[in-house]
Image (cartoon, rainbow, N blue to C red; front, side, top):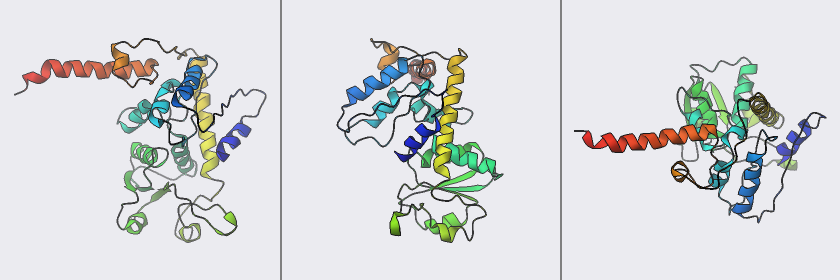
Length: 271
């Protein structure tokens, strides 16, 4: 939660408007979904962030899917992640920490195209989105995880390493350290980010940028808050019960339904 508090501090200006809803750790899914639905439908809300990880009894997929894709400034809606994974598609928003890593590379003049990039970790929050962003920038990407053999040799071959294992180490005095051994890595790395004070602030910056971009879309009239229908039609039945149907969602869902219809119509004619 520390970076969330820092983000709140970053928006503490007369022009900023924000709302933080803190719920009990024993809250049920229905109450969380009702809060999300209210923000989805509020015309003055342009960005929604669900702080992860959630308590284990809550359905993370249902809650993230309920966030309007047009307000998903954290970049975790299934449609945003899906478009991030597809060639020739672009999401409305990309996850903030991986996006911050790419921004750091760009600002430091580190070329990505054609480079060998290794991502250590495959979480939905950092590892996998980071690998997809690097792939979109034409890097040759390898993902390492807990079952990878000879990880050290793979990392040594990399031009770019993003460590996102999510297993922080402990040091004397409770000093924060990263997934990598900083003192050893800095002797061979051409550039390295310190811990703390590097990617964390970038995460906040990318969240604020995503929110600003979303505000521009809504204030320009390109997007509007959509009231979730009470009744579920044929399209609604083909999607998760609590997934919000904004304009992008309707297009994607309509394409899915059309594809199913065509497959059933012409599938039987194959030889």
